[in-house]
Length: 221
Image (cartoon, rainbow, N blue to C red):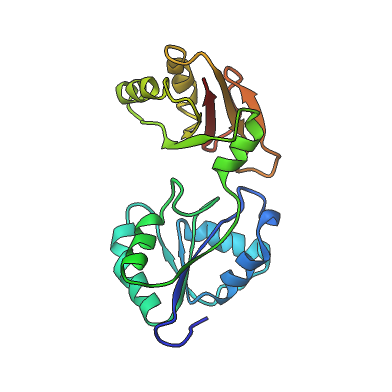
């Protein structure tokens, strides 16, 4: 909902990891009232809104990696003009291995308000499910795609004393886990089905997850 000039805001909202019933009431409200909805995938966001019974009254614009930088001036201008911009990604919290931090940074630099609607996070969900120590951990984003870079990255993580969480494509998870054998001798868990309607579950290292979605991988020395 458009407010008085100069009182616009950016709202980051966590979206469900698969089951729309996990959405917060505040997310449902904002989907129906925001002036602009910046969505990683506009089709998924429209589907989510329909599942929640929310009618999108604001402008819906795509906001994914390839267009993120180009979208910044328009979104910052909208917030400066008093509009509420809602930022959502396909699943989980914006800015965490998803689009968002550049827009947040631009708003901070411009002195514009940034707020957040807490919601699901694949990182902390995977950590809680793993059974690995969770008092201290690090998040490494996505594993490198190229085999050589990935092996060097795995070697660097070998001396990390905290539980490590990272994401991997289901098409590369077997190769990544195989490569990890050269460096890691501690517990390794993969989490599957986080983006489906079935409950997420933990697997031991060589029980490869049966999923077409991004796979969180956790490792402890």
